[in-house]
Length: 462
Ligand SMILES: Cc1cc2nc3c(=O)[nH]c(=O)nc-3n(C[C@H](O)[C@H](O)[C@H](O)COP(=O)(O)OP(=O)(O)OC[C@H]3O[C@@H](n4cnc5c(N)ncnc54)[C@H](O)[C@@H]3O)c2cc1C
Image 1 (spheres, helix red, strand yellow):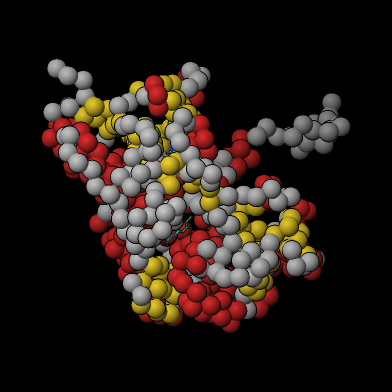
Image 2 (image 1 turned 45 degrees about the vertical axis):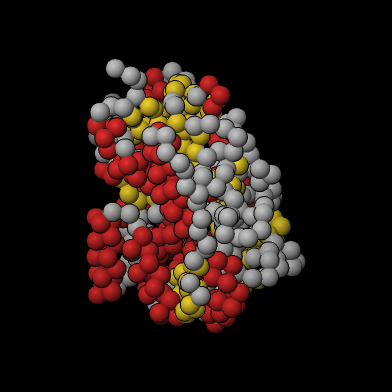
C-alpha cells in the first residue's frame, strides 16, 4: 500500500478553514481510501469571523456565535491545536508546539508533510510608538473585542464613581488609531453602545463621552471609496466623534495620548487598528517573501519558485491579474481570502491528479461597513448606499457569508431578539479572572499581628 499524501494546513482562519473544508469535499475519495490525509494546525479550536467582532464588542452578537468550531466543520481532517514555529520546506518539515508538548516539557515537535498550505494570516502592525506596547489594545481577536467591551463599560463605572475630574475625563476619553474598517466599525459600534448605556448612569450623559478617531491619511474607510468615506466622516462627526485626519499617535505613555497635531489627551483607552503585517511565522520559513514580508505567490496560489507549497489570504502576496498593471497584489481582506480558497483547493486536487491549474482572478467588489445600529455605508458593484439601507445590506451580506447554517441561525436569532428587547449593557470583565473569587475564599487568613490572648472571643485568658 502506498503512503498517503500528507497535506498540512497551517492556520485555522478564513483560508485555513475554507481550504480544508473544500479539500475535504474535493478529495472525498482519496480521504476515504487513505490515499490522502489533511492535518490543520492552529492555536485555537475555532475560526473567527472577524467582520462580526465590532458587533460582538457592541453586544449584538455573543462571542460564541462569532466563531466556528473547527472540529465540527472539518470532521474529516485531523485538527492539532498548536502553533507552528518554523517551516523547513526544503525538508518538508514543520516545527510546532501543542498544549500537550508544553505539558510534557517535550519542547517542539516536528511534523512531516508532502503538500503545504500556509495561511497564518496577519497580526497588528504596531509601530514603535512609546507606550503603545504597554497600553495599546488590539482588535483582531474575539478575546480583544470582548475585553474592549468590558473595558469601555468599566471606564464608565470608574467615571461614575470617582470624585476626581481628571480620572473621570481620562476614563471617558476613547482614542482609536486607524481609519480602516476594523477601527471605524469598532469605534462606531462601541460609541453607539456606550451612548445607549449612559442612560443607565445617573451621572454620565452621552455628551460626557469623548471619542477620537486618529487617521494618518486624509481619508477613512478606503474600502468603500472616496465619496462614501467622506459620508462616513460626516456621519461620525455629526455624532460628536472627533475625526482627526492627517494625524498620528506620537506616544501614549503615562495614560496620555500625544498626537502629531500637538494635542495631549489623558485617556485610559488607546485602540490600535492601524494596519496589519504578515504573521511572524512567515519570517521563520524558507519560503520567498516580498519587501512587505508577504509570501510571494503565483496567480495559481502556489508559492513562487517552490514546489508543493501553497498560500493565500493576508500572509500571501498574490498578483492581481485583474489590475491591468504589473506589480499589483490583492489587498488583505476576507473577500479575497475566501474566494482564493476555492481556487486553492481545486488546484491542490488538480495537481494531485496531474490536471492543469487555474488562475485566481477577482476584481474587488467593494465593501460594506456598519457605523453602529441602523447606520452604515456601502459601495458594492458600483452601487453606493448609506444609512439604514447600507446597514441592512451589511447585516444581510455578513449573514450570508458567516460559515455554517448553525451560525447563521444563531446570529439571526440574536439580532431578532435584540430587536425585541433592550440592548445588553452588562460587562463581564470578571470572566477574565475566573479564579479570583475562589483564591480569595481559599486564601489562609492573614497572620494575626501582635494579637494578645484575650483579643479573640473564643479564647480566654488564664
Ligand atoms: C475587526 C476586523 C474586521 C474585518 N472586517 C472585514 C470586512 O468587513 N470585510 C473583509 O473583507 N475583511 C474584513 N477583515 C479582514 C479579514 O478578516 C481578513 O482579511 C481575513 O481574516 C484573512 O484571512 P486569513 O486566513 O489570511 O487570516 P485569519 O483569518 O486571521 O487566520 C489566520 C489563522 O492562522 C492562525 N495562526 C497564526 N499564526 C500561526 C502559527 N504560527 N501556527 C499556526 N496557526 C497560526 C491564526 O490563529 C488564525 O487562526 C476584518 C478584520 C478585522 C480584524
